[in-house]
Image 1 (cartoon, rainbow, N blue to C red):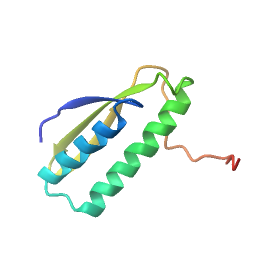
Image 2: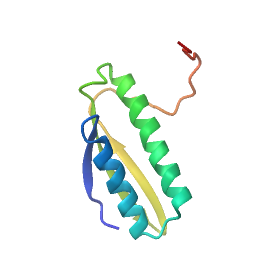
Image 3: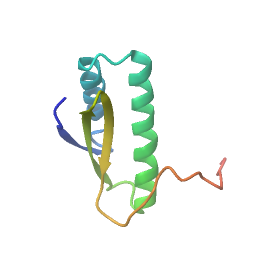
Length: 94
């Protein structure tokens, strides 16, 4: 699997999700795992864009890398270090 990079933004979201599905299908990943990867990408993108302060203008570079049989989904963005996976302590239910 080559390390092709795409730019993910609100405008390219659908295109990037289709790309992710295509690439994971090529790697013979199950549909369940593909759906999980798409959901993780969506949630991580949402958290990163909210953390960036300007979600409308936010973009991130997405790449897939296969190493020793494991596939990694890599997201890179400019800005201050931010961990989108930190557990949320407050939930807004409005």
